[in-house]
Image (cartoon, rainbow, N blue to C red; front, side, top):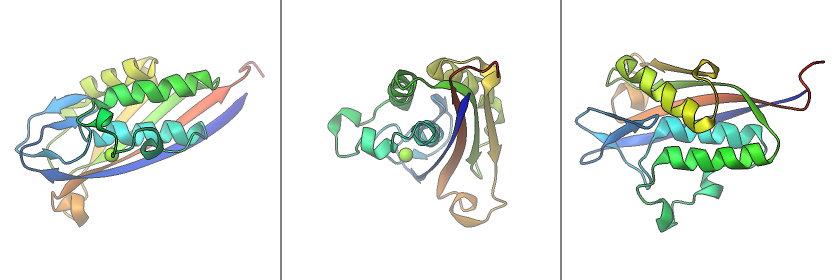
Length: 163
Ligand code: MG
């Protein structure tokens, strides 16, 4: 079996008058994230991890922020499109692990729904998806609540797995 790992990293700044969407879940918070799409930083990092593992480039290449089709786009739909490319290239998803770096809000209550959304969009059992959240102990842009960062790794496999 051939294995391929991919990583994804994304950052979005907080902005007034925006909804906060993470993993496709609207999260109650005074500010949301700025972006051309819904600015779902977690889902964007996961998209880039898949594109990286599959050797398909990056999210900016697939969904340019100069393209009006992606204005306020639901990022789960972007991930679904990424998955069509991944599957068409013969890859099976082994697992996804992601970390959201945010000083606020508390994300633990929303983790089950975020995990369910990602698993359904990726087309795997929720047990293949892990999402973690961490503060940065008030350090850096995330710690100053200027924005949220997300990191993800994905493992893909192709071919026989009975070796
Ligand atoms: Mg992004």
